[in-house]
Amino acid sequence: MASADPIDIFEASPTELGIVWSDGHRSVYTLHHLRTLCPCASCNDLRAKFGPLLINKETIRLKGLEPVGRYALQFLWSDGHQTGIYGWEFLRYVCPCEECAKRAAAK
Ligand SMILES: [Zn+2]
Ligand SMILES: [Zn+2]
Image (cartoon, rainbow, N blue to C red; front, top):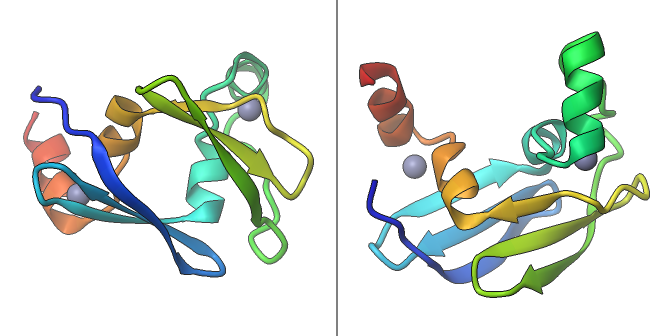
């Protein structure tokens, strides 16, 4: 898969994060969706043991984003969780738009 880099990362709404990619693609994620997908070791562990993470949709917010090298973002969540490093490839992979969902389903 060709890798694209974000050229813009923006707050699409108080509960959504948007990314514009270098290939022109545009992704809008709900924060709740991204939080439940947190790729850190402890969340992976919780999901393996208990299934999908139970995150409060109403209250989860983003407190900040920290760049990690040139390949990822660290998400600082309002619930105090901040060990998740979201790589570009991962973020693009979980893009919830129709086009990407189709591509994922075709695989
Ligand atoms: Zn996590
Ligand atoms: Zn997409």
